[in-house]
Image (tube, rainbow, N blue to C red; front, side, top):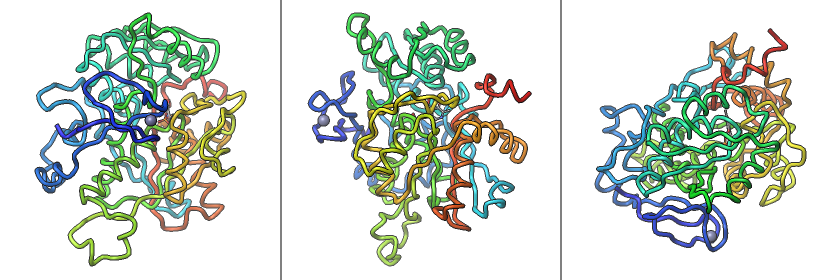
Length: 407
Ligand SMILES: Cc1ncc(COP(=O)(O)O)c(C=O)c1O
Ligand SMILES: [Zn+2]
C-alpha cells in the first residue's frame, strides 16, 4: 500500500491513518489521504499502461487507494462506468459532449464509489456501526456496502427524500430515521448521538475515504479520453465530494507524470513523453432553490454561508451548507471555471430531452448539467468546439415522484 498518512486540508496537520477518525481535531476541517506518489511512480512505472488487463471496478486503481494490499475490499463492482459520447445534444450546442453515466453503479448512483472505499476502510479499522446523513443516494449506497461488510447501518434522511431511496435503505437492512428537516439537521442528529450509540460517522468529507472513491471519476475520465482531460467538466454539486475528489486525482496524476502541470502545458519540449493535457475548467451546477456555492462564488467569498429555505426536487443538490465549501470555491477559481444555478422545472424538462435524444434516463441532478451547458454556451463561458464532460450522477428511476404530473 502507498498510503502514508492523512493531512488536514486547512491547517496541514498530519495524522496517522491507522485509526478511525473524522475531521481534523485541531481545526475541524476535512482530512485528505496522502500517498507516496514518488514510490508509485518508481515501482509502478507507467502503471497506467498495465491497466488494460485489470478488473473494471474502481479497485483497478489499487495503488492510489487506501486499504492494505492483502485486505479484500468491500465491493459490489462499483466504478468502471461508461463515458458516452452524446452526439445529438452535443451537435445542438456545438460542443464535443460526453456523459459519464454513473447511473449504472451498484444502487444506481456515483455514491457507490465513495461508500465502497469508506466502508472498506471503516471495517478494516474496526468500526461496527456506521451512520450517515443522506439526501437519498448516499444512504442507499451506505446501506448496501454496510450489508456487504456485515456492519450495522444507520441512515438519517429528510422526510421528503424520494421514496425509492427510503425503501431501498430499509430493504438493504439499514435502520432508517426520517427527520423533519434538511440533511444538515440529519447530520446534527448523528453528531448528537454517535458517541453514546458507538456509531462511526461516514458523512460527506467528515471521514477521509469517501473522497478517495470519488476521485476515481477523475482517473477514469482521463483513461477513457486517452489521458487528455476535457476542456470543461460540469458537476452537479451538493457536498462536492466528486468535484474535490477529481481535482485531487488531477493533482496526483500530475505528480505521477500522467498529465502535464498547467504551467508546462505551453512547453511541449519539457513534457515530451507525457501523454497528458491541461486541466478542465470545473463548473458547479446547483439548483436555484439551494445554491450556496453559486452565491459564494459570485460574491467572491472564500466560504459559503448556509443557504436559507433550501428546496429543490433534485434531492442530491439540497445541501444548504457544505463542509468542503472552501475547497470547492478554490477549485472553481483555480480552474477558471464557475458556478451556475438551474431552476427545478428546467431540469425536470431536461430529463425528458436527454432521455428522448440520447436514451439515458438521467437523475434531475444530472439533467441540471445539460441545462447549465446550454446557458454557458449562450453566455460564451463554454466555446464552440470545446470538449465537455457532464456527470450523470444517478438514475431517474429513483425520482419517479418528480415525473407524476407529466405522465
Ligand atoms: C444523484 C446525485 N447527484 C449529485 C449529488 C451531489 O453530490 P456531491 O455531494 O458529491 O456534491 C448527489 C448527492 O446526494 C446525488 O445523489
Ligand atoms: Zn486542521
